[in-house]
Length: 276
Length: 171
Image (cartoon, rainbow over all chains, first blue to last red; front, side, top):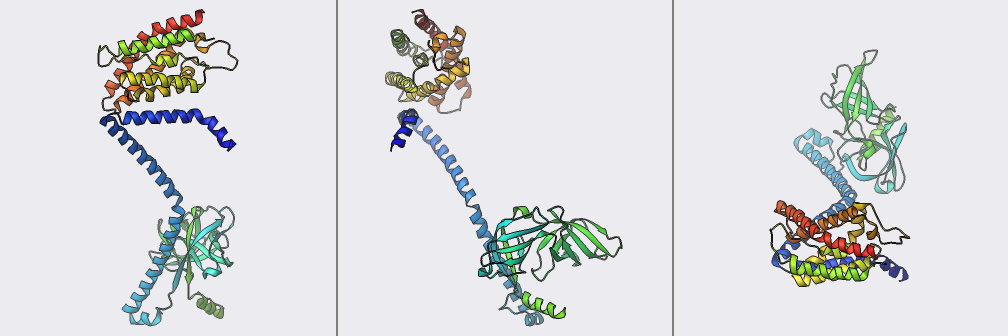
């Protein structure tokens, strides 16, 4: 109470000024129809402007929530797309229909959010807020809502998972050129965080600058972009091309991601283990 | 010690000149001189803001009632009362300092006083005519009315200021 009184004592001049000015404005505004209409119009404009700014601020602070909702929606749509694709395939082609099990979708999508990440080291990792409690396990792929490669999961706890980022010198994944389907391997050389290295591309591939490179891996579906070829050259033994690929996504601004689960991954892994 | 009797006479004279002379003569549409802000401008700078505001409120109420301003004079004169020290500092680079023995106004040179009064009257006229018009549809008229009225106000007010200040300094 004492503090309140002390505070009022400090600002009482301002309060009296505002009070008297307010009364004067009211008297003046109501004195004639002209002043009333003019002042009401001005106050409405100012009120509208203040309200607009307040709405913008409110909207800005609600952006993270909207992002999460959008990511969840993207994951849901990806799932629907996958279901439609499987249905279409089974309906249109009897052989494919026999091979595809509609009840068991090949890929499932789980929205997630980045908790923390590094980009300045040789081995960069991303921690996301989904774990084994959410059905997440190792080796699941991680992409952005725009279908761009992020990495894959290497460790899980009950509530969190660790993603090996594409910006990790231990990371490696298969890729292919979208225009001619020639396969290659992609890895990061520890240099720029915007570029990765493409190796082992066939000499018949005829790479071009600006050509899109996509993921070809059992961890992810088709159509996941890695990046675009910026430059390429034949290796010294002239047996394969290598290229410098600009990443499709800027990993330093990553916020929402989608975890991709291949329901056949365990089967594929067991098969490969048996072969090896 | 500020000369309160001289100040009171000056205030009464200014109000009477404003109400019975300046507000009743029509020379040109651009000429609407107002010298009553002098009552606020010539108050001792050492006074506390609340007292300045109360004097300004009293003057503005008299003007509103006698000239039918409906709050317009109060609305425009009170900000001048609050901004008066800033106007003084910006125009003359002088401010009230702790331990001053004589009134700040009485220490100003004629030139500084002229600049201070002219600037304050210009600000007052500009605010008054803008609030009165509540529109920028005719900016030329607004500017010309402000400039011409301020000029005439300064011409009328300056002898009053000189007489008042000579009384204040002389005693």
